[in-house]
Image (cartoon, rainbow, N blue to C red; front, top):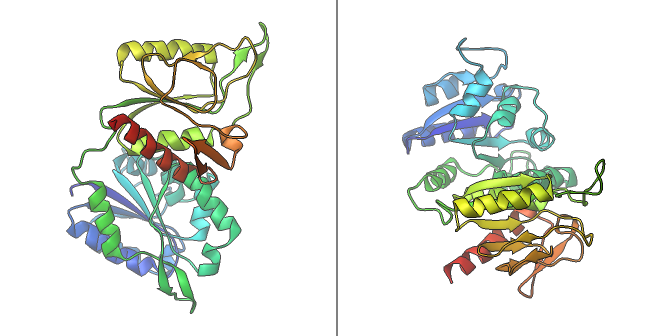
Length: 334
């Protein structure tokens, strides 16, 4: 596999499985480094991970093992993939809210590598509304999940909450790094996110209501599919119209996902989709988009949308993004 895998281990009885996971990943050819939280070290000594990974184990943000670099930034840049396994309710809550109070969470905020979360906890904790809310937020932010399996839990309950087996996680990682061609490789995708404003007068602008959750999910999914993504977020509509024309000149095959809300005033300038493939969300444009998604309210705040007569739920932005990209790719093939 010859990839750099950073394993962030948080505290739960499943920590013992994380030791086996390091062994399996190393056997598959990965170079593994481990960060442990303070709670994780209550279950397993760092030496176990050091022996299995043949690398130093990190747990103190201020313990700079190499004075020439800042450890959490260096690790964040080093990783090709980060696994959070086991991921407790506590660390999931921290990640969802941008809290960086230890080596693991600080590194997670600093990385641009894909991050996969493997939850492990009591079944009732996993089903708690707060945990579900945090998982949904992380999904919208582009994190991927290795779902827990069902079975007998350490707490005595039987249900969903067991960390997935190390062999299966290793197989998923190997598949991710396999040499298969991703469907959007070498494709440029422009994604508008949030709201694009227009001038009202010399001192004021009009900006529409939007939070960008759908656009962000679509941009994240495009990256996962191999695209070169140009993300335009909460800027000037006039500036974007000019930028899009430049992108068309640079790459006539550019694909536009116009997921940013725009003001509906009579004088609002229109984005031109002539000559390119585009997906719109009810905005008025010049030209004919390949897909136009309809919703009762702006897509960021709607619970469902209509795509070619089919009703699709939008409450899980990541799942919606996957569904929409599946339709887009089918249209590309036709």
